[in-house]
Length: 262
Image (cartoon, rainbow, N blue to C red; front, side, top):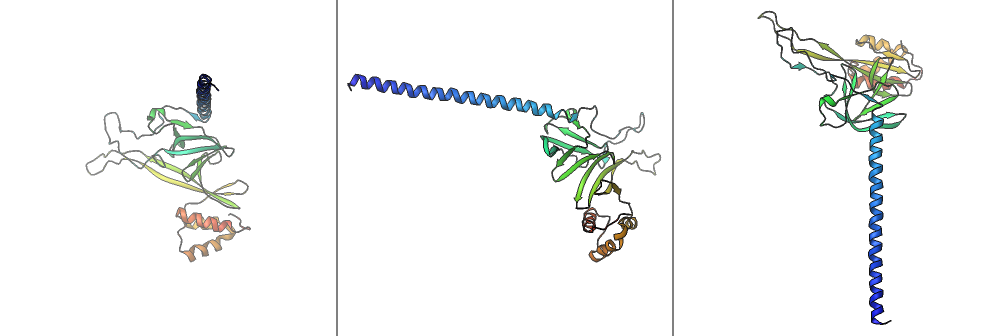
């Protein structure tokens, strides 16, 4: 091949190589554009889906009244909290065993029995939403699972699931109004929130049985296995009014296949 044709051939090959590189770059840009479009549309759909499960209400957060009457001022400090945990936590909402909301933040207001939702932690309180109460969804917050049930008219937490029974907890909050001292011998009392949890044993047929408050009534609650439960408590030196102990006792009680609740 003559030198001139060799130069022309090399030049053509170089241009073809540059053309291939250009075509690859164009193709990559197309792919990136498609991926970006898919991501944006999916994100939009995800946000649209989320709005099926949340509502916006005025004055979502709960505070104590700062005024006893028209002119009497009281401190705005409050003892306790309406929340099980005042911090918003990352969580997941499941429906039919599939996650339908994730990447957002939740907080349970036990006093109002509402689950508050923030899309971003830095969002102001004016952008807090309320999760729709629906018995078909499960909310996972760290290692806790919250479910809404019409029978107890609120959210409950699952503590134990056995073959025959499950133990659940309904966290109630009692609110006590602030009181202003009427004389110099009295003290003003701040507004106070106090925990008042209720525990339920749910049988395999879905029936709810609320645990009594006193120790003696709790023992009678176990029906035909009362004697066995008493021995179990005595041998292990247990306090049935302690939540972790109650879980242990229910786990032991669940091991009986012929148990009958009172």
